[in-house]
Each structure stands twice: as C-alpha cells, then as structure tokens.
Image 1: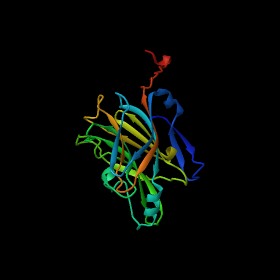
Image 2: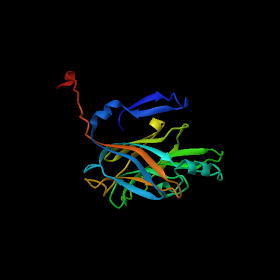
Image 3: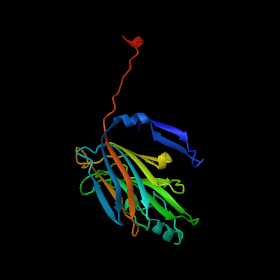
Length: 233
C-alpha cells in the first residue's frame, strides 16, 4: 500500500483517519472530471478515463435522494453484514452504490467498492462501506472475499470515496479515511489497456447522484536505492 498519514478524527472524536501522504498527489496526471451524474435505481454508467486505467486516483462524492432516506427510516429493522451479504449484487432500497474498477467491457471481471445504507437493528440508519472481490478475477485460486464494516457519516456530510488503483492493488478510503479497505486482485482480462471504470447504483428504488467525480491517471513512483559504502567487498 502507499504510505499513509494517520491522525485523530476531530469530527467524530472516536476514529483515527488513514489517508495517503500528500506526496502521492505529485504522481497525478491527465485529470478527468464529471459533475452531477444521476444514477437511477439499477443503473451502471461507464466513465471514460482515457486509454490507461491500471493506475488511477479517483475521488467521488455521493448524495442519496432525501425522500428515500425518510421512507427507509419508517421501514422495519434490518440487519446487514458486508461479508455474509450478496456483495454488490445484493439489492435494497438504499443500495449498494459506488464504483467498479479494474473491470473489463462486459464486467465479467470487476472489483466493486460501494456504500450500503440500511436501517440497523437499533432502528437507526447505518452506512456500510464494502469491497466485493467475488468477480475481481476469473482465476479460481485467488481470494474473492467480500469485506467491510460500518463507517460513521455525520449530519450534512456527503458520502465520500477515494480509490487508488495500482494494477493488482486497490486501496479504498471512505469518509476521509475513517474506514479503509486494501484489496489484492488478480484480473485476467481487465489488464493491458482493457481496464474500465464504472459508476453503479444497484438500489431497488432510490436514485443517487455522484455530485463530483475526479479521476487522475497516475505515474509510477521513482524508486531510490541507497547503498552503504562501508559494506563494499
């Protein structure tokens, strides 16, 4: 993973934040930007990011239809668990929605990073942040776990996501780094220029708006090696 800065979350007072060190941003190049992309229930939207999507830095802010939030608050209590769920394919009123990275054109390979909002067993809305590797590779001998947990979202905060894609590693940061998931993936077809990026909303009735999407292609980091002259033969 890239080097990270770890600081106390002064907003929640209960979390630490993990965030890529600012030097990572010096590797950014060829920025692509989209605004106010509306995702209807069950929709998938391709994002054109040029001819190289194997090394990317992506930031996205999402807003959920507020009327749908009020409707779900009035619904019955539900339990949810990222690992035991159906992943990005599972559907409810408020999700899942997010990004598909390291995907090929027909999405037979894809790695999903997403939010899932539901009413918890305590009666309050909870936001889950998950990564679904179940379709990350057509290889049969690699990890394809669905993983994640709840992430604190304060009043009037948008759901924010940053994703670093570096060939076989995907690092996902939710809500400024309150939750972080690092995945190792091994695509067999979404490689060598065939990688694609999609927005998706697999909710059953709720629309979601990606208010801001920024995507940078990333240069490789320059590695510097240091040798101890005292150890020369």
